[in-house]
Image 1 (cartoon, rainbow, N blue to C red):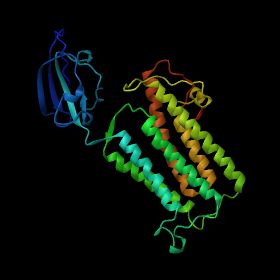
Image 2 (spheres, helix red, strand yellow):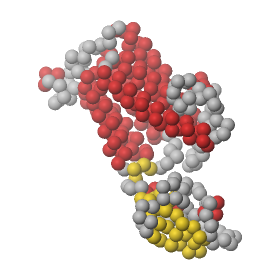
Image 3 (tube, helix red, strand yellow):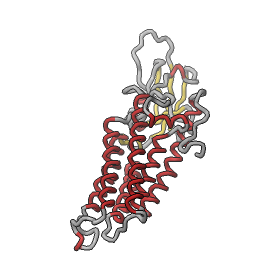
Image 4 (tube, rainbow, N blue to C red):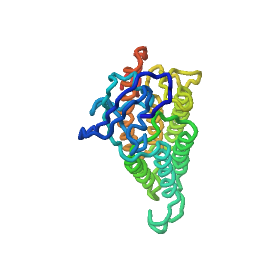
Length: 310
């Protein structure tokens, strides 16, 4: 806990820190002032790695929680849990998004050892293959730029193991999709140019919508804060979907990949879209429940990800 040199404080606390698993005593702090920060409870680990709780199986205390406002007496017992090695969200996002961008381009340019030697550094004769490469690259360049300049994260870090899990998912699917889309034997969509153009419109519309939602969410949180507010539609028409959906960024993301699936008519893309939809639905339901729990005046008409359906 971080000590604040507030000379007006008259109430001191005794704080005991126990291991959340073994219940062993880790440390005892005497004459602790009322305002504390969990980062200096157990200085053996850096703050992001620590979870301080009132109950061994309870939720972690927030960094901004003040000791005198917690449901404890002047003799308080807290439980410590090591969250393991941590890594910043920005690092994870940049790594998991840069991979698909580069991997896809390797297949697009048909670098050696991917296809038969006679196809090395050749290009596809189908214009939809080139369009698909531009759309896929645009999507991940957009994600990289949003990570650097748009997103504001409520948590600075995540477990280090997540980078391996996330990269396996994104990099693996990118390779699988790119292999078939850029394959010399690839065949264009059955309905030809009309199908591709319709898919492109869907893709671009949803990409703009997704970006608009990210900007709206960014504007809800002042720089350096962890403030949570109810997102509402803005003057941007792409944000009006907030009237019906709690997480329209996922709705637009789903639409983008449905458009890409229609454009390429490729089974691995369809499977990636399905898996992504399932995962985003889990995230959306979690955020929707969090909104309902935190805000009593939360709009009742909203669904997590699909209006009136899901």
